[in-house]
Image (tube, rainbow, N blue to C red):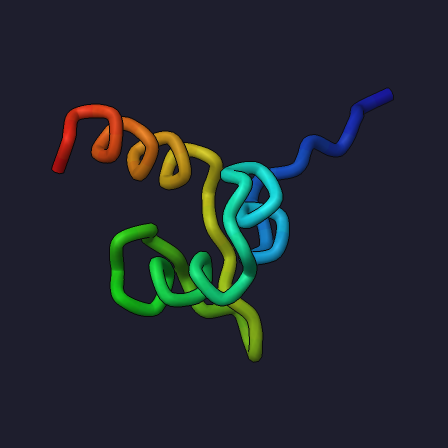
Length: 61
């Protein structure tokens, strides 16, 4: 039996993970600071892209 593993996150989920508000997270996504793909009407963010953003912040960029 296989288990479905979440492959990507919504903007709302990323906001919760980062402890940011939804408005700030949407800004970061739309400005390209957090990479995303458009899936219909929604933005989807891979876990690695969240990690990349956090690493950039930690480096002081």
